[in-house]
Length: 117
Length: 114
Image (cartoon, rainbow over all chains, first blue to last red; front, side, top):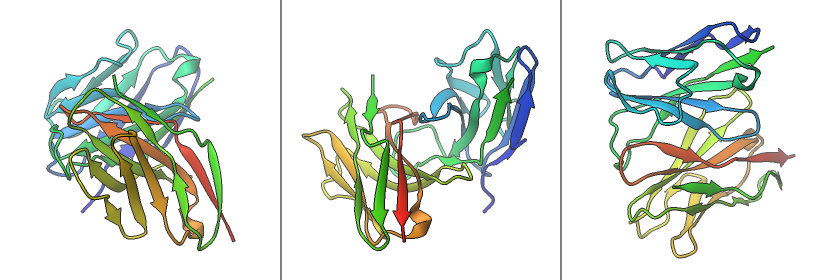
């Protein structure tokens, strides 16, 4: 079974530029998550989708970050304009459902490392 | 709000020895889940082990076991017979009672010495 795919793996941009990340979850997984992992910290949830609807975006900086999952499968995360503090690894994860039940673990992609200069 | 604390920024262990990585948590939920993930230098998060708050027995998965002490709110990961490939960052995470959102600790970097 193919895992969670993300692209690009690395991206370097200058501040105030725009950037977009793409994620394709495991086939059949209804729930998709975007996490931000700043160097030296654990991942922090930015947004959670259930199919193509948003479940939780309470920690998404909505003035500059946006995300969509139009057909309930793959997703894009955009930053516009980028700031220096956005330098981080952006991890995409998926799970079968959005329920807190056993064995509904999240599977993570390899991440996109963003450097903002 | 949930909080995960990992007090060990870094740990060393000799190959073939066991090591314990500490994790304490804070939550007001009655039902919750605790996870450990491994993150090698390549960056992906690899699921290791899961413990439900109502599980009476400690979870085990191969060389990984979770020492769950509910009254002390701790969920320590024990890795037995360490291997060089165990060198990585390890994260403890909590899933809240509703929804599947994970809250992560700051992580512990483990280095296995030969």
